[in-house]
Length: 558
Image (cartoon, rainbow, N blue to C red; front, side, top):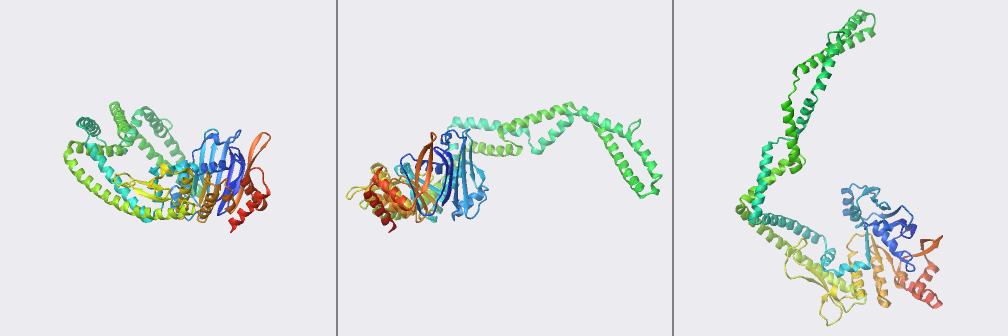
């Protein structure tokens, strides 16, 4: 559940901090007070599209934070471990920051993440349902996903198995399609592959160590004079003809040897100087050998430069390393062999394609059978939910397309149908349902799905628009039923919904020194009665509206 929400410099909100509780919470207030702005802020926190237009006028940035109770979700825990995000077993903190400069920063428990990762994690915590979400019901391509949400772990395994086979099938199909290209394209491809293979073979590639060795050798040849001068200077300093270092050290060594018996300190000095003297003699010998062996080969330097340039060009074309170039060579060699021996490969691919297709159709039909069972259960439960929402005469159907067409999610498309009245044939929901019917249909689904999902917070943004009377009361009861399984935050203009809530916040705005500010207050007792009365009567609260408000609140308690 969402425990704390902090909003700074968002639209007309200056600073806002709200503590939420479990159960059903409503947010009410006059139109334009900022109710939907709060939901917009939560939507941004959940990974929604950000814009500098959200930032309060005159401010540099907006910051939104949400502290959630960590749900008992193994999927969410695995997801956070996958992205290297540390977490406590009881809480998780989401943060979103937008700057006027365009900077967009998302954090989860203090770890910076991409907006897509934030959205992926927030999907396990928040489900925002607004009026525009009715579009899911209006779009038949979304119906299969809605049906699958009602499924169980067995359905998940069947879907995964089908999708794995689908990927195998598509891979074989793509290989076959490549070979079935027209002859002219095949000839052009053969010419290109032949040239590339010849170019790589002609390079006689070894490994990445070859390039490193060539660079080292080139550096030695290119700096021949500097190296020779340095070695010569060192050798002359050690064993030159006039006043060389080793002779001077030898004189010093002889002097200390004559007095070493007089003190342990002198004996130690004699030992250390002697060791250094013999080491320097070895150094001088090594330097002399290096000088004797040094040769400058301009032809070899040119050869190295040509070789390195060849390796550079090959890496630009075929891979960032020698190993990648070799992998590419193996790949195109196989492709060339396949194209050159097309008929033989087509026979093999035809066998693989047929086997994959048979397997895919078998799994697709098995998946359809499982979905049909789930659809039957969904139809039954939707019917029960619709009765409670005063649509008892409506009949809900999940219709499977008879034609089998291979696509990533199965062989059969699904569409929701409804017969709103007795004696009428079922028709596509998207074509005949009214706005109020769509609201009740989506609410019925939310009531069912929340029992199976692990979403901790569900937000309803004026989903009760366009209804009144007993339907309004039924919607209020249904939203409260949803709150028995998940925390519910609800923006509403219906007094029936406000009265049945466990917690009630009132949102208002005022103007101070020509700036607009939004404030949120938790209301109880008489203040809550007055607010429900205002929702009933409008601007003028009467004794009758107060009595009606008290009656609504009493009925809600019962």
